[in-house]
Image (cartoon, rainbow, N blue to C red; front, side, top):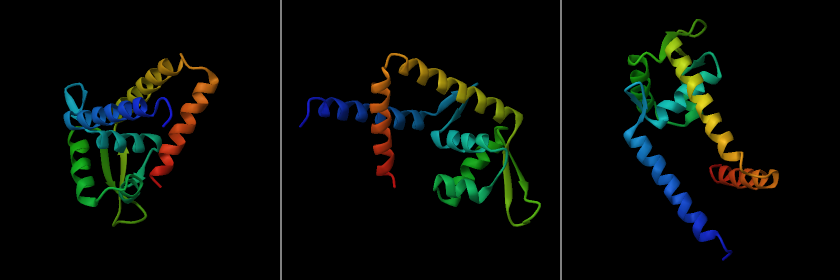
Length: 142
């Protein structure tokens, strides 16, 4: 084994545990707690102005019942609007409300700020190594 395998493994375990705990407790947005899946839905809708419900379900690879629970929570909290699709009356369009768009923009800005401050201390070669590692991790999901 190479020099840093054990330490990398331990930090990845801590990172994953932190994500699980964060998802369980929720992420606070003005005393409104959102799960990581809630945030993924908001981010997916924020990157496009409107998506069909089935497109979101397919993109996130979650079952319909779980998605309906998430969607109802986001609608009741004022982050998402749901409307009948004009061209297909069986389908629904989803889009962010003004409150949802504001939250989406604040979240993206905060994520970029954190990432850029972390990467500030790395050299270009270290950034390439991190990117290579993340690409390989991503390939495990395929």
